[in-house]
Image 1 (tube, rainbow, N blue to C red):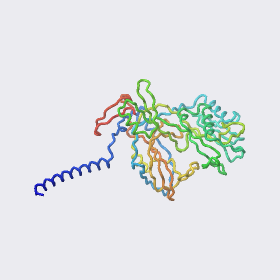
Image 2 (tube, helix red, strand yellow; image 1 turned 180 degrees about the horizontal axis):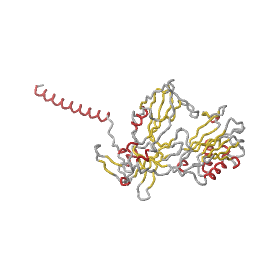
Image 3 (cartoon, rainbow, N blue to C red; image 1 turned 120 degrees about the vertical axis):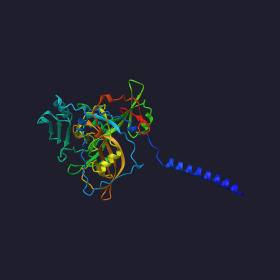
Image 4 (tube, rainbow, N blue to C red; image 1 turned 135 degrees about the vertical axis):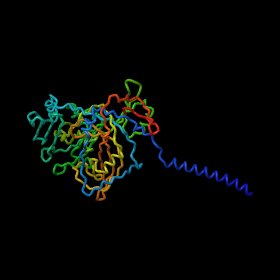
Length: 446
């Protein structure tokens, strides 16, 4: 081969190698780098409409009690989700206002109706000051206490009393337990609002120890009581089908239950993203009914099979009062690391979820899931506010594994402004955002 031919082929091979190398680099770049997502969820406009002033809302800043950890615990949190990161979550969501009417003129009549449906008589009633009504039935070892202001109440049974349980044991089926709890609540002064009634109750099997204390039973055969817990959901955010990125947003936030409503004023569809409403104990609803063996064998499962009730329902306005900006999920995790989260649940794997909690030392928290929900407090409040629910696997100092749940208040309180009605947009509008991000979409009212 002559020198000129060698130079020619060397030049061509060099060009080919350069092209191949360039294609390899492009391929690696595409396959190894995650494509940048449009931050749709951050292009929303909060209206801060629940109060006229920012200070008024901040005076209701969410504060959640926390379980204590053992003295040798370490606030060592790692993110161990399947993707190694936190899934997309909305950055602005709804806030709701509770409907607290205060003490009603007929509160005594309503309280007597509750007592009557539980088998108490007027003669067993005692008025405790101006705030509480109390009934005691020594025959069944039951005590009923009803708060006059809001008709929240507790029914308790003293299981140390030999008359507390019937001699013949006849535990209801799951369906019978649910039906007994639902029938009592629905037939008594409207104690089961629609937002609870549309969700299936959760059941927990309970066994009584020799001292009458509750433990979790592992089989129906050893069960003495079935706790029926009622939970509700709320609209985290709302999206109109006219939005040009409607399908992408629906897909992005598919971790939340989506409920569609037709818009009566147009041909649009309104999609509500539903979030769970959680309580301080997480596993217990603010409405809990304990069902056991009927005291009268001749009667079906009804109020004669109810042994305990914890009723702390706070009526909620069905539509949000406003929308508010949230801290990010990463900021929520940083709050955990700094000891500012609220520990709600910490139980050994397959452990007893019914026994009272006792502090345990944890050396590592492995975060497996982060989502948004709402917090329903055990006391009367003005607003129902969003929280981050952070859950995963705990490693105890003994090496045993368990499960944990933390709550972190989600609202970014420092950015709240006074309400300005001129800034409230039509939620069907689509507004272009041409900021430094290169263009995106704002979703007013989302």
